[in-house]
Image (cartoon, rainbow, N blue to C red; front, top):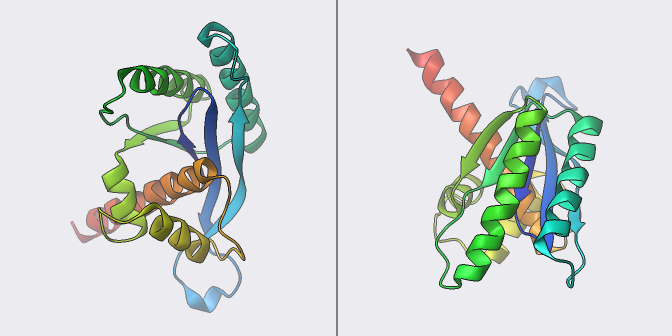
Length: 173
């Protein structure tokens, strides 16, 4: 299963594609994670929102068409003291949800606290701790950059871990 994680923003939107499955040694048995692709969608700083949002949408549509993820995990908006920033992130989230809905992928939303808990095991983990765990969990030789892309990979990992947990609960019933 491939999951597209999205860290929404209008200037920089991070994305990360993570695949879960049995890779390598089948004797290990446990589901493993593999980084497929990551990066950011950038829009010009001086462009108005009415131009930025279609650019983000087009970029997401291309990613969704190329990788065909089964699910799209998006970071939920948390209240920020800067209302202008919160509005911009809200616009970017809307574009991401619309693109995912048009691709018929399952859409999931996670708070920053949920992402930290799923990736690090501690909801108050620092950005550096999350990035280090992303590197370890995806068996990468470096911490993914920029931060927005690393966050998007963490969001995708959160979704996979959440689904794994839900599947364990269903199998016990």
